[in-house]
Image (cartoon, rainbow, N blue to C red; front, side, top):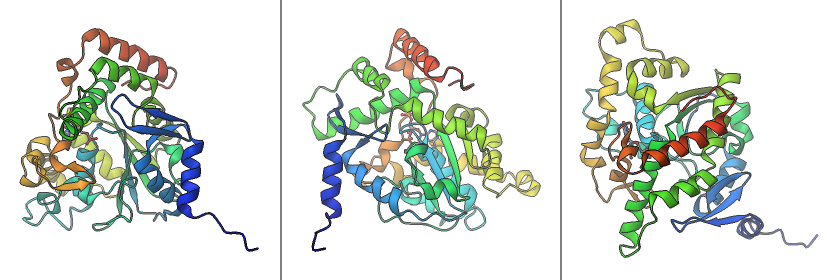
Length: 318
Ligand code: A3P
């Protein structure tokens, strides 16, 4: 009685002070929250999400590690689930004027969330253990997309380099070698990256109706088959008529790197769908194997050995 409850902000400050901290060589401070490294700016929103998110059974949650194809996955899932409302030839298709991140919000960056249509689509980089209990117990579905660690790392290096050289042009951005060392220590946004992959991989085997596990390279390899798989999983399978009419092919083309990256809204503009990031930054090359242009074969082999060791016994190959 008469005791003042701590304000949410105060308890958040207390929490921050209790967490292990690491400064990345790219300068940001990350906090180790329940086993994963999270940026301070996201952490408060993450905690709010954990405590207050009310899922609906029809919700679809897209999960990725940063730079593993989130933008592509968002555009595909949006287009597949909204295809009765917006056909590909519709001049008003939202993807023509809005970046995929503006249509499928990240739960850790935006609060409150905007929704465009049904089913509700959300995205996150959070590991399974950090998702709210409400998501785990509801019937909502999770699509997880991962990417070969060599290309993911290289994509991240370019992404961070671009951001930092704009903020501080005189700063010498750390070398790929130094950054790779920290990546393999697990100190990356939402990392350790292998822990996140393993959590969703295991779950996709145990509960295939809950988690669909996809790979960037498999999307590149056979996008039609992967779109069908996604649609079946989301209970909105393509009919044989749609298939014969080329609907899946059209969706794949519509969401391709070539098409999306050439839209005015996705060019290097000042438009933003994720706080502080220009829409254009999410489109670079969209290729498999671009690691060759940044890291040496011996660095890549070391990374492979490291990943293999982490994934040992799981049955997963990346
Ligand atoms: P690169 O840097 O290798 O080009 P995320 O969306 O998770 O931030 O990942 C970004 C990576 O996905 C970048 O990889 C980007 O070019 C690529 N990408 C973006 N849109 C894509 C698309 N429609 N198809 C294939 N790759 C895409």
